[in-house]
Structure formats: C-alpha cells, structure tokens
Amino acid sequence: MSADAATDEAPRTIVVIGGGQAAGWVVKTLRKEGFDGRLVMIADEMHLPYERPPLSKAVLAGDADIDTVRIVKPDEFETLNVEAWQPDCATLLDRAARIVKTASGRKVRYDRLVIATGGAARRLPRQIAKTSHLTYLRTLDEAVALGERLRGSRRVLVVGGGWIGLEVAATARKLGVEACVVEGAARLCARSVPPAVSDFLLALHRANGVDVRLCVSLVSLDDHPDGASRVRATFADGSTLDADFAVAGIGLAPNTMLAEAAGLAIADGIVVDEFGATEDPHVFACGDVANHPNAWLKRRVRLESWANAQNQAIAAARAVLGVKTPYAEIPWFWSDQYDVNLQILGDIPTDCSPVVRGSLDEKRATLFFVEHGNLRGVIAINTPRELKLARKWMSQGRPVDLAALTDIGKTLA
Ligand SMILES: Cc1cc2nc3c(=O)[nH]c(=O)nc-3n(C[C@H](O)[C@H](O)[C@H](O)COP(=O)(O)OP(=O)(O)OC[C@H]3O[C@@H](n4cnc5c(N)ncnc54)[C@H](O)[C@@H]3O)c2cc1C
Image (cartoon, rainbow, N blue to C red):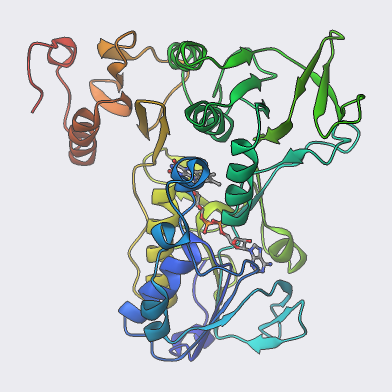
C-alpha cells in the first residue's frame, strides 16, 4: 500500500464518514496536527461524537447523559471548524472521481477520505423476532429509550450472553428489574474469555438474581398472546418465557457496505495497514469498521473497543497528513458489571492455562497468560494495578517470574 504521486500533495479537503468515537478523534487530531483545510464530517446520528461504553452502564442507569459522554464539547467542536453534515448519511463513494454523496443530496470531493462508520447491532432474523417489543443497544438515543423502558418494567429478557447483554442485565438488576439472559453457547462471553472466567461471570450474575440460561435456542419472540404489551419467548425445547420486553445483544456487523460497493478490500471489516491506509492511497479507515494487522497479536484483527477507536483513529489521522506512526498497541478492553471491573489486555490464547493470582471466588484475581516466560495476555478482575504493571512488562518485553506472580503475599513491582 504505497502512496501514489497524487498523494504527495498536501490535502486541502478531508472528508470523514461517521460521527462516533473514531471520527471524533480523527477530526480532533487533524486540527491538532495543523491541518487547516476544509474538513467535512458526515454523520447519520444527530449528536456530536460521543463515547459508547457508558451507554450500557451509567446512561442506561440514568446516571449520565449526552454531556457526560461527549468526546468534544460543542464550543470546542466549534473551534475545530468542522462542517458537520448531520444527521446525514453517506450513500455513495466514487473513488475514481473522489466524491462522496449523501442521502440528502449533498456531495463533496475529497483529497483524503477517512471511513469511520463503526458497526450496527446485529438483528435477530425476522422469522424469530415477530414482536415490536424488542430493542437493541448501539446509540445514545437507544440507551436513553432503553433506560426509560427498563425503569417502567418488571422483567426484561436479554438475548445474548456477551458483554453488552451482561452489562444490560447488570444495569437492569441495579434498577430493581428482573432479568433473564438466554445464550445459545454453553458459556458466557465464550469468544473472549476462558471457561474459568465464563464460570465466574455466570456465578456473578446468578448471585445478583439474574436467571441465566445457557445452551438455549430461541425459536421465536412474539407479542404476548394475552394481548398485553409484553413478549413471549419460545425455545427449541418448547418452553416459554414471558417478559415486558426483550433486548438483543448478539454482536456487531461492521458498516462496510459503502466501502464494499466502492470496491475496497473487505475481510471482516475494511482492510487497512498499520497506518489505517486502505489499498487506495486517498482512503483510510479506523475504529470498529477497520481490520488491521495487529503487531501484538501477530495477526489481522477487527477490534471493538474504546481504546482502539481512539488510538487507531489518531494514527490514521496522522497518516492522512503524511505523519506515519504505526498503530501498534496491545489490545485492551474492559467491562463493568455490578461491583466488578474486568479488563482484558493482549492475547488470550484458548489453549493456554492462565497463572492465577488471587481468587475468583473473592472477585479479586488476575489471570496471566504466559508463553515461553513472557506475558501474552492478562485478565484482571478488580485488579487494575496488576493490569497496569502487566501492560508495562508486556510493552518492555520483560520476562515474568511465575512464582512471584502467584505469591499473593508479595507485592508485584
Ligand atoms: C453499549 C456499548 C458499550 C460498550 N462498552 C465498552 C466498554 O466497556 N469497553 C470498551 O473498550 N469498549 C466498549 N464498547 C465499544 C466501543 O464503544 C466501540 O468500540 C467504539 O464506539 C467504536 O467507535 P467507532 O467510532 O469506530 O464506531 P461507532 O461508535 O459505531 O461510530 C460510527 C458512527 O458512524 C455512523 N455511520 C455509519 N455509517 C454511516 C454513513 N454511511 N454515513 C454517516 N454516518 C454513518 C454510525 O451511525 C455511528 O454514529 C461499547 C460499545 C457499546 C455499543
């Protein structure tokens, strides 16, 4: 992916598609790096860029609102001098003419384009979801509406035992709402944590009164037969479950349609290099929509995390201006549920048993994944200090002392 002669010229017009966390960091960084040309941000949500992690936590609980989740305050955004076309949706990308067209009929010619379109919550198939009492959680507006609905409900059905589903269930319990989580797999968050942590999450939710059902196959979600505004879920074994409404947290589909229609390479996201560059020297992508070669994981990956949305966006924005600093961070993700802060750093190999420091039963444990004497990954449960240390060791490539890791009487340093 090398720049052609045309890209040697400094860009005068940069267009950013998307208005989420990654787009917000792109426009902020472009101005910070001194770009003083025309900057257009096309975003289909009406809000200025904001962070999504609080949506399933503080916003859902009613403890935070738009003002607490913004990436840039409105007056600061004003000073960035961004033409924010919102709400508007980019509907066509003509790479030959370097033009983006929008649903409202506007069009703009770019010197560089950054696609930061994130993803959309995966929908349940229509043959299963036959009720209107089903919601999803991706946007601020959805979080506010879901919070209001939760507060007026007695019981919620959560479809999907991944991070979003579990955080919704935890917030529901905090609000005094009964919650039932149904998951098709045999364990919770099976794609990102080992069985011991899945078991920990299961015990945590059950201890907080959540009815968690694993290996459950949902065959239909209907309006309740009694005519009340409720739902009835029917499972493959014929059993049913009633709730006031359902929330599905069944994953994310990256918003790649525009890029795909424009002929850019797609492989679980828009294919970019370590600078966020696509094979088209005028087009970059970052955030949840981008699939990049990750130096730590030593493989290509599309990450869905706050840290990636921010830092990959910063690297891509710099690269747009010709400042090439590779995005090479160790992947990091966190989740907050009840009194538990769980953080995942690095690679969590499925075939490697972790070295455990502390106790999962006591909700205070660090799981170290060690390969040839070096740390590959860490899961920290209420142990942020250990995670911080592990991050330092991993960044330095420092070998670890297994005995010291498990000796709880010894402070790690
Ligand atoms: C409820 C929730 C909780 C989360 N919790 C955590 C957490 O605890 N820890 C963590 O690390 N990560 C968490 N995440 C993940 C993190 O928030 C995301 O990784 C991050 O928001 C991705 O940012 P993004 O800008 O790439 O994409 P997005 O935030 O999805 O933004 C993309 C924006 O582009 C818009 N768009 C798409 N297509 C177009 C188009 N054609 N034209 C115009 N606009 C378009 C979209 O509508 C959207 O507004 C959470 C996510 C959610 C939804």
